[in-house]
Image 1 (tube, rainbow, N blue to C red):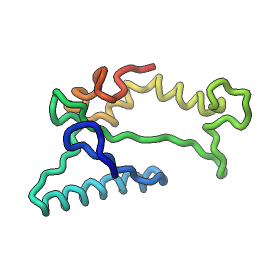
Image 2: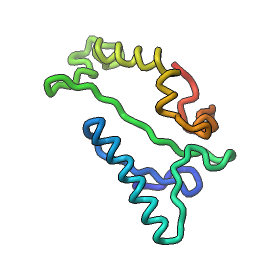
Image 3: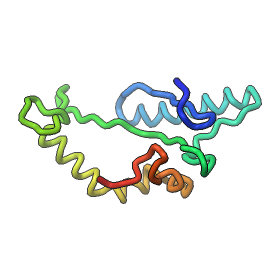
Length: 127
């Protein structure tokens, strides 16, 4: 856990695990943080943009792709220009192609779109 740039903003980094465990860990962490804040008379919020004139907060995900214990996202040799395997490049191309649809799941609140703007430390462009 460490302070971030926004007023009252902190980052809680959770360890990597399988998707279902990661989702459960995220929900559990939020419940614990809210309960501790409440115990001390404080309010913990996880809204993406709590003040329009501040940076805002977000929950982000790091992706990896494994098969039979091997990282198949990363290129196994120096033949790749960007260090990604052909499978990794195809995965990222699919993510970029379907990004507008993915946003329906990753940014479910209208408040989320107040944060997805240039100069707010968020991905404002599909590229």
